[in-house]
Image (cartoon, rainbow, N blue to C red):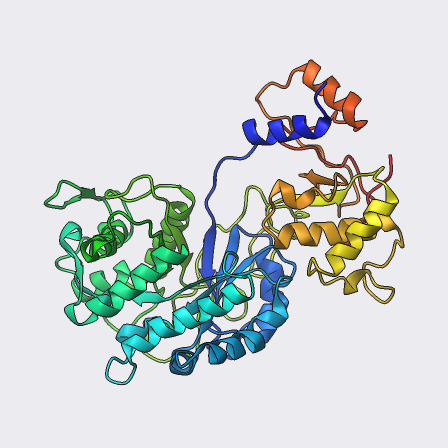
Length: 508
């Protein structure tokens, strides 16, 4: 008879209970004097569909606030630091040591954005070659530390790096930027990092309202714009992405894999006098469709099977940001946490207690994020659990201060509770893969929130599970799976108040 672990792996491989839903990212800028604290922002985002956050520096308060949340972060080297990091690897190592290393792995940092629109922000004073040199130096340091597979190095570009963006199939990079773009794209292809582009149909429409259809700019199902090569575009964003893709191919990288990420895209709710495009209604329409686009797993006409990661710009209106009125009004939320307009950020697979977010967003039904946890099996060997706990709180990189005697999660002082806390944090920060919840066979993946003080029934997947397989798992593992969700086994009950963030698995 096959061991239970084999059967569970078979379940996971064949009968996944969730559809393949793509991540939705958001840009979190802080150029405002009325914004919520980073800790508050991190807590609130855990009950939304946002699971990636891009920031514009390495603000230590933000990095600390997002530790153990399961939310991935992209941090940035500010434009004025690029030249210094480009000098040699020791400068890059110093930057990484001071800015990033103290926060990992508790904070899931998955990428470093070197500069922002560096090549087009101040071309008279910023040297193009410094950008690729800084990227190479940071990557070399990550390789030395064994972090290059976890943390990628890239740089966000504006659409201004293109000589022209229409027609998409004929697009190329600006002639003056060809040498450095060739080096950058080659670097991205070699390291598996994405090409990032900040794409804003809003600006194209605002500057040419007589030539651009509003519905086309707002990601609507417009009648379609035809490319000479036969591609039909129902929205401008797809055309902009394919324009960049064509420019990459024109450099000679058509046979190399370079993933695309829309690092910024959004629509302002307010603009200068006479800007009829910047309205709350248009902003709501664009960002709602953008979020749907991010979750759709759809590609573009030129590459329909290549999904594109998208970061919405932006989380907050920033009242101290330079530039015109529109620059300060791209946020989905005001500084006080109220919504600028109605936008649905609820998450179908996030868990909560039915409360209301401080942003005014209703929780989908606790606290993070995908409703998937890792806990210790109720009857796991305590010697193995102690070794797992020691590993997680040591080499595993988990911040275990919460389960120390003075911590909020010390009580109940039970090995299973402490091990479950550490195992779950390790599982969240290392990617929520089933192998990150094995722990020598002592871990269980659960879709029932172990923090809640009541049993949570999860309906069976409509896919049929035979009684024979049910009995084989019972006999081999001794686990009661009467409430199994197809694809995983979860803990039956837990002892907790609804506000307690700690885990106390009830021993059955």
